[in-house]
Image (tube, rainbow, N blue to C red; front, side):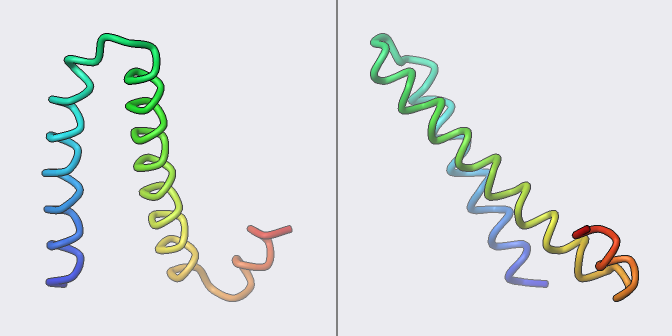
Length: 67
């Protein structure tokens, strides 16, 4: 439980720092970097959520989900 809380806290603070940095992005390169970082963070969160959901499924449902 502590690990989940610490992970969520880290994501929250890192996203705020990234948001501040991205709010002042003025070149295309800076905007691209911000977009890539936001994409990676969202992809990581999605994958973690999906893996967590898979663990909760029964074996039969897992087979259906992957098919």
